Length: 229
Image (cartoon, rainbow, N blue to C red; front, side):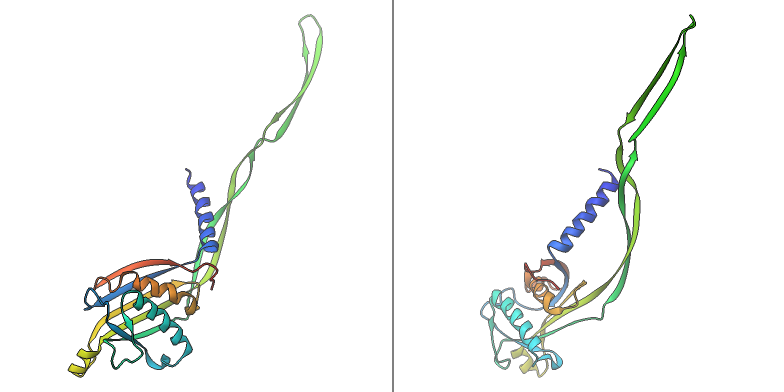
């Protein structure tokens, strides 16, 4: 397969993915000292800073609670009695401009498609003469006649989600916060609406919970059908 055809197929594939199935690719880094099984343990989710009382935080808290519940934890509304206190923070940056250049092939006629006419007189040794005339046609051929270069400018936003867990009993005993779980989730894309990508980012985080401490992994999650930024 020629490199030109591969380029054409790549452009077609990218167009299909961009318009048919949006995906969120997240990079997750986790450090923790949690036991292998957390079944039956309770957790209360708190907001970082002044986000605790916002409707946005409430929506994101429910998403995280659902993920905790799927992993066997019980959700507590009282952080003073829960086994673990989880602090949730999140945000989106102002974006950065990205310029990219590429080219697409131009298809057209590369040859043929012509009609040739010829005529003349043939003289014989006996003194006679004869005239002739005729046409010939060459079928056209088609292929790539060149390339159109183009440059696009897009804005890429950085989205983040952070989840920190503390052992409530150990924190009370030592008189200071005892952190047992620290996770950061980062993703980049053209969507600046965190409400759209938060679900896939949270799902990516809990794909392997609590996961391997000190490990960074990448997870791609498709947006639900019909959801667009």
